[in-house]
Image (cartoon, rainbow, N blue to C red; front, side):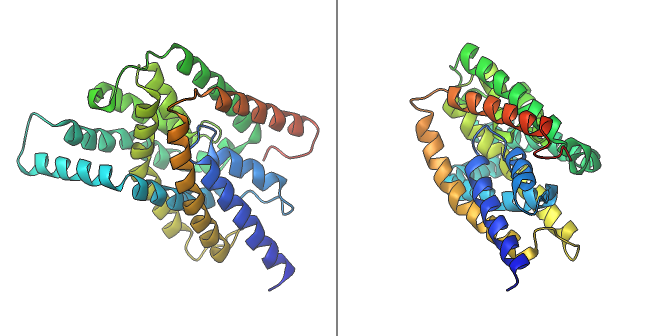
Length: 281
C-alpha cells in the first residue's frame, strides 16, 4: 500500500466518522465534509457524490433504528391503498406525507444538479448558511408553540416540510436542521420535529446515494471506491449511536448548543477564508 493510498484510507475514515456524527444533528453534514476536505492534507473536496454515497450508511442507521415505525407506516399505507380508503389512519397519512414531502428535494435535486455539484459548494455560501440557518433555528426553538405531534401533521404542513428539507441541497443548511426549524415554526414538539426529519429523509437520501453510486461507477473518484465504502460503513455505525443520543437529548435540552456551534463554525470558516487558510472553491 503506497503512502498516497494510505492517506486516502485515513482521510476517508475521518470523513466517514464526521458524516456519522453530523448527519442527524442540525449542523449540516455536507458543510462539514466540504470544510474538512479543504482542511485535510490532500486539500481535496470529497464532492457531492462522496457525500451522497456515505449518506447511504447513515440512512441505513435510520432504517434500522426506526424499523418498527417504518413497517407500521408502510403496512398502514399499503392497506389504505389496496382498500381505497378515503379516511386515512395517522400512519397511512404519514406514509403519503413522506412521499409527497420527498417530491421537492427530488425535483430540485435533478434540476439543480450542476449547481449543487459546482457553485453552491463555495465555502462563503456554506459559512453564510451555517450562521443564517443556525440563528433561524434558535428563533424557531424560542417562539415555536411545541404542542403539535406527528398525528396532527396534515397535507399543507407536510408539503411545507418537504420544501424545507429541499433547502439542504445547499451545503450549510442541514437536512435535519431545515426540516426541524420549519416544524418548530409550525408548532410541533422537538421530538416530533426530529423524528419526522429522520423519516422524511429516508427515500430522498437513499435515492440520491444510489443514483450517485450508479452515476459515478467507473469514473475517477478523488477518494477512491474502497475508502468510500469504508467511510459509508463508519457513517452507519457512528450515525446509529448519534440517533440514540440525539433523541434522548431533546427530551431535556433545547437546540441552543447547536445554534451556538453553527454560528461559531460559520464564523471560523469566514476567518479562515479571509486569512487564506482555505480556498472558497
